Image (cartoon, rainbow, N blue to C red; front, side, top):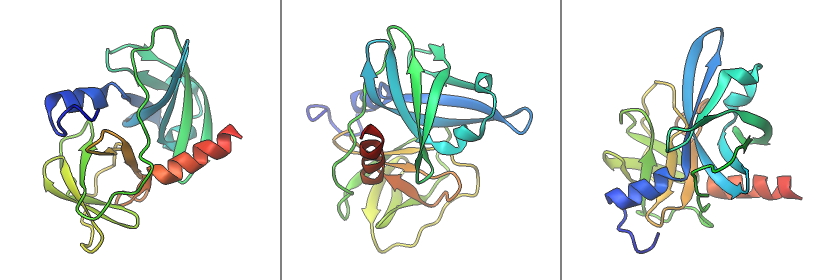
Amino acid sequence: MADIAPGSINFHRNIENCVVRIVYRVDGDVVKSTLGVVVSVGRGYCDIVARNSILEVKKPNRVRVYFPNNDRVRITSSEDLGNNIGMFHILGNDLQVAPMVLSSQDPLPNETIYLFTYKSFGRQCAILPPGNVTSIAGCQLKHDSTTPAEVDEEDSDGEILVNARGELVGIVDEKHRQHATTSRVIRNALNKLGG
C-alpha cells in the first residue's frame, strides 16, 4: 500500500478489503457487532482475528460474518488467542477479501494512526500500550505516550487501528475500552497457535 496516500479514499478502500463485520446475538436477542481483521486467505477459507467476546455466543447460528461485498457466511470454528482476542475460521468459495499485514513494530511517538469503525466517531482516544493514541481529527490519531486517555462509555465495536502503511497496529478491547491489543501481541499469539 506504499503507493497509496494515507487517509485517501483508495487507502480506506484497501483497508476495507481486509476487514469484515461480525454480527452476533447475546443475552436473548441483544444484537452486537464488531470488526474482524482477515489475517490469512486460502483456497476456500480465511482466518479472521477479532475480539473474543464472540466466543461467548453458545449457538453458532447466532453469529454472521459480512464481507466487504456483502456476502454473508458463518464462522465454522474458533480459537481463543488470549488477551481478549480470538481467531475465527471461515469456509467458503470465492471469499472477496485480502489479508491485512500485522505491523512488526509498535507505533512510534507522534506516528499517525487511523481508526476504523462501523460506529460514528465518539471516541476521543484509546490507549495503545505502551502509550496512548489520541484523536486529533476524526479518524486520524497520533501515538502519544504522555497524554491521559479519555474514552466514551459506549460499547466498543472492536475498532481497528492502522498505521499509514495500512498495517494493523491494534484492536480496541471491548472489556477495557481504553486499551487496544497490539499487533505484536496478536502476532505472538498467532505464532504460538501455528506451532
